[in-house]
Image (cartoon, rainbow, N blue to C red):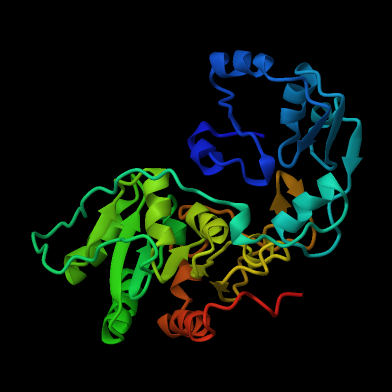
Length: 329
């Protein structure tokens, strides 16, 4: 599998017998290194069809992708082009069609083991109150709730007051909340932390360190971003907040049906974009606008997600004994 070099640690134990090879299209040396790999018999291109030419140059014997790319020259190299689904389906289930045309067995946590951790840094509290800081211990998940509140785009920010109210709810139920965010996403975390003085990881965790934290908490509350997807592979109970993003595409899926995960969203009229992988697909309803392009000039979709609705999702996923999703059709 070729992918972003930053994700290589996720595949350290070869889940599904996958050998991961970090590739950066902007790095010539990264391209040259591909020729040290065996010639592929079969190449699957799940997104932008321009990468089909990379597989073609590398000598792949049979290339498969989805049809419908708006640039015809991207499709010339393929041996087989499959139509995109004409009905609503989640992206993981869609990708399985490239391989066999059938649904794969649902994911099980034992399929994906990550074991080589890095030592965790100290909490980066803004205040100097370091008393009663929670300790992340392997297997000791009770009573620690992780809020990963960072997002690259301001359009995905949930109001600070909502995070404060949710943190107070968990405090009243004897839960310890810790905060985290990615590098460059610290602004909203700072607002929450100044009021709550909660312990936090302020953009200072590597991918493996963040995974260790995520694996050893009782519950994750996060936004619609990469962390929400990573939590599924880790199988930590997760409540994910979707603003303009499509829960049909990126939340629950048949492949993930054994994972304790709940999405929270609201219906909004401006979730009206029908694009995926630069292709127009009529049944898709999503929004990829920036805060500047939004007709409300604010994260209106996120503001419409009530604290009570998030609390209900958290209570459901915990009170059910962390049961997997059973109502997905």
